[in-house]
Image (cartoon, rainbow, N blue to C red):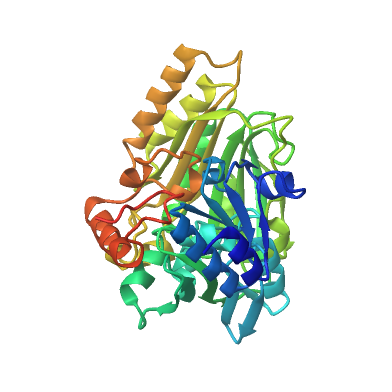
Length: 441
């Protein structure tokens, strides 16, 4: 199939370099791409046609929904934009979501029906990328990952075939979709089991002085905290107006029982150096972040660091994370509590690593000219490597690296072997390689 034949066959739009829409089409939330062609699909049949064209031309495929992935910057190939596939249907607690939908819109639609799903923290993040990579969100301790709530999917294969996937239909492929990334096809519909949700209690605490004692209190608190409670620690420099500078702890309690939330948070609120800034009932969509789109005049700097899944937030990782932030003035440190429902899923039941982890940790120095020289980069790299060595796995959705070796760090050998075998069955030509790539073996 030629591009002209595809243009005549589909209802979507095909945009090539030089077309009037090209500059807009190649921009995505996190950057500007240089694909060979952008295909804006308006239907599942459009996706099928796009994949048949890519196969005929032997072109790699990049799938775009929310557009937050760094893989959009890799030149060449076909970008299939499925953002128009964003329909939502609700049947009781069963929710079907188009593969191009974004979490903010989904949260608002579900909220109107008194329902919720554990999603990412950002409204514009795509349902597809987040779910296929796992999806650590504010309800992770009560409901698990976004992928843990997945009960079915419609997928278009590299050959252009449409398959329905669930625990009873293509169970190996269903297993792979719950954390194995976009390696196996284009998911055009996700089926989730949602949960009753009438609101959340959202709390924010500041930290006055050394953050290490506060983090020790927080770590102790979360060892026995109810599953309704999930917390995040973040320490950022004064760079982004969407993220207030300094060290702070945010907490979300599922449900509207503010008194229960206050009781659960009392040990933290009463600890020295902790300042209560706000607490109250909110609707879940209102706490999702609104992040600015890529600005070519002010591109994001490089990032020297990474993330890891910690089995325990003990003194050593706390001290190292606090020291990392202190030693790098332009840096960020983030922690998110895990455990609970996240750990209820057996390790072999999904590809997502480190189900025994109780915290997710991230740290990185911003590679800003004049603030980070070669010695500084080397020091930040060494400091992060020492932190990652304490962890049990890497969360692929939270890395901007396009290093082909990243997938080997994300999945244990046995998991990677199983993913590779499934990849060989469904995408033997590795058409879907613009991701943390699992190669068909």
